[in-house]
Image (cartoon, rainbow, N blue to C red):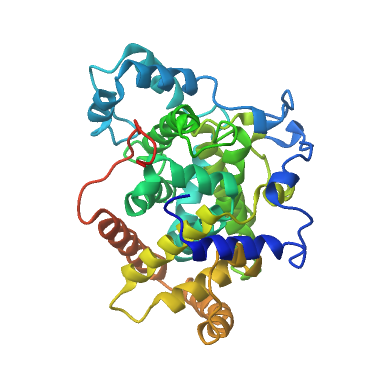
Length: 406
């Protein structure tokens, strides 16, 4: 805990003591003892062994990446994969044969992937990009820091030492999912998902070697599902709460693009929800038992909101406004866990103004050229965020070889 301030420790401890008042019966580590009851009949596979995902990892990627690390091959692999960026791009020559065989298999879309739904999802992302970027970026980010295992995994792995770089690399995958050509030949979602799967395997091998890590092997199937639910499941719930008009086909397609992404990230098909009803049921089972405050989560939240405030400077946004926006998106319980300050001026203003803004924007969407113009602006924001986080330097997802330096 050497890098954690006393204030972060106190805020986290205070939030933990407030759990009862917030309607949660026990802290995350105690709730994690609850049994797994979600049935695989609700998955895209329709069946499965029903094994508790807390004790399932990635049996294909994990031994492979551990071997690459032990052999000292990772720097060479990162260099070779640096320019592997397109879904349809052949793998570069020189890769170890075991890695090449794995990637060729891992990059294949599942048999149940529906190209028509993926195209509908692209159009949905085009018209709703503003909301989705806000929810997946700021909202999902605040939820992730209130997941103890995820917060600690991030903090003590290599990415925790440089959060701008860590967020940039996370954004690369998130923006790839939301791109118009996400799963088209010229897109990059397959590439970024497979690279992320390799990163996860490396963290599973490296992090248990850190003296700061005291838990189980990180990034289990349940851990990945928990993160998944802070993205599409959470985003869809908020869109419905904001009364954003969506057709049944739009909602189904948005779920589908994340189902395919989950598969490519290495989540077993028997755990990937087949419908929104199944997704919500799974979310309600695993999110509460995996959420709560940690000093690391509070520290990471402070860094992330500081970055968000800097990205918008010298525009009208500031840290107090970022605090208020984050609290509005994540809710008071998560915001308290994350140590996000209450803003007496900005808080009520955002909670009143945002629904009105959504209603106004939705009234404009049907007008000619509005979706195209909205997409151009949203894309400009994405490029600006990545440029800021990377300081103008090219950044790509790479397999780590170390944990956070002490």
